[in-house]
Amino acid sequence: GQVLRFVLEPQLSGATWFLRALFYVSVAHCCIMFLIQKLKSIALREWAVLLLTGCVAIAAMAVQKGILVMSPMYKMLASCYLAYMLGIYVRKAERFIRYDLVTAVFSLVLLYLLNPVGYVSLNVGQIQSLGFFIVCSLLGWLLLRSAAEVLSGAIASFLAYAGRYSMSFLML
Image (tube, rainbow, N blue to C red; front, side, top):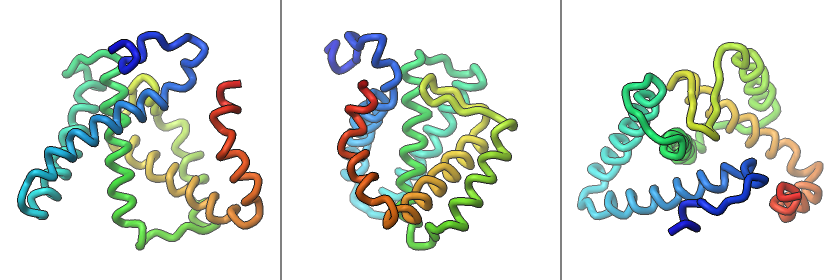
């Protein structure tokens, strides 16, 4: 029980909050999708996923407004699960998205301009506003994916090396 709740996590690994978040979000999503897949109709499943996304978004904003009180772990889970659901929608719309240098630069400029406007602290589940969170999440994804596509040929071996050993680098 203590291992699954990360109770014995040492203080030095606090920077790895995203691993804990990814674990919780993955488990929660698997359980929720298991239940949604029990629905007979494909259209009903799609509506259930949309309803789930809406409920998570409302819960995340209710926490931010102080209407709903949660422990920091559950606040983080709600915000990270919303980001996870955004990723699912981006994946479905990926055939309409261009990942190139123009997209990377455009996303970088917009994120730079949005920087003084608000904040997002997923490690403690704090987002200033739902719209700001969604826009910054999508722009961040576009920036990273576009940069990866542009740079993939030039520095592919370095990226492969860094990917293999990134957890080792992080732990050091």
